Amino acid sequence: TQTAVEVAELHDPSSGRTLTVATTEPGLQLYTAEHLSDPFAPGDGVALETQHFPDSPNRPEFPSTELRPGGVYRSETVYGFGVRDQ
Image (cartoon, rainbow, N blue to C red; front, side):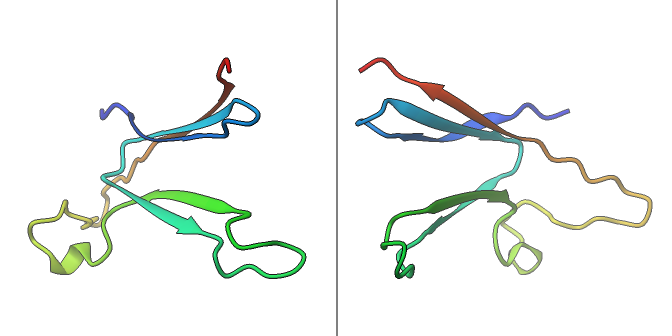
């Protein structure tokens, strides 16, 4: 069994709010909301998605994504929310 490892932390200095992400996945995809428009503004959102590396089936140096018949796929991602003292 794998143990989730912390891979990201976001912090809002004005409020002290924090978000941590821990996962057993080898990769983390970050999407920013730079394309948003009215009523939102670029940068008003963010997505952190845990996953295997893109193109893994074609890249032998990447962790395998092969799942054989009868195999079991397990993954754990933990999102932690908190407030940091200012």
